[in-house]
Image 1: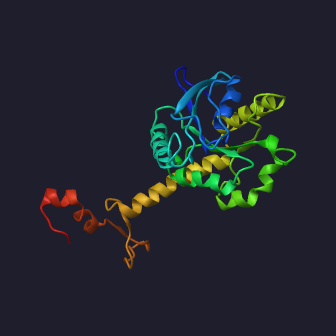
Image 2: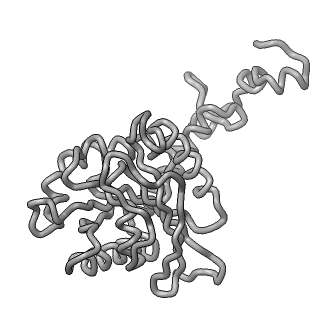
Image 3: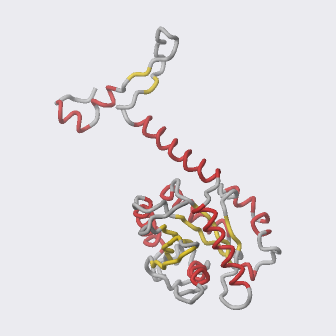
Length: 261
């Protein structure tokens, strides 16, 4: 997949405070640049971007505030969620390629609570690429690390993310793990942004189909089947414009001076 010279693809990392979002960025950059915290109160208060190049392709990696700091946190939970939704919408409509959204999950914390953040944002993410990175593998008993996913598959399935592309890593910067974790993260980014799977493409098609069906059912200008409609000469069911719905639109009533039917 080719990239224009000035084109930059966005990668947004989001999740709970202390889940390893900033540490993942530091591992990818191979230096401590993003402030990291594993406490209940995070240290990331704004959306911060860092430039990364993989195989000559440019990415802008975004670190975001934690989503569950509560009212006493640096960024209260409700404000963080609202701001993140707005930021997601901005990136989705950006001229650059569709952003990759990565949910960061701490492998030793409550999985359901962390996946609920995705539920709150999945409608905003829509058909854009989505992946999960599980951190804290150095504190988990799963060996090999990839076994963690199978051990938690039932919960993942309940949130419809069991088939999502993912990586299980250690977010520490010392020891031998960072090099292995970095390679896992790089390969994940390559797979999702350079070689999207058929599942990813199918999800995008299904999303657009759902949007088309929703518009068809609510827009009176789009013809649709009427209950009990008669058959045409060829034996097929006729479709009619919803003139009543059209005339009941406020702007229509104002322009042609009619009352509700």
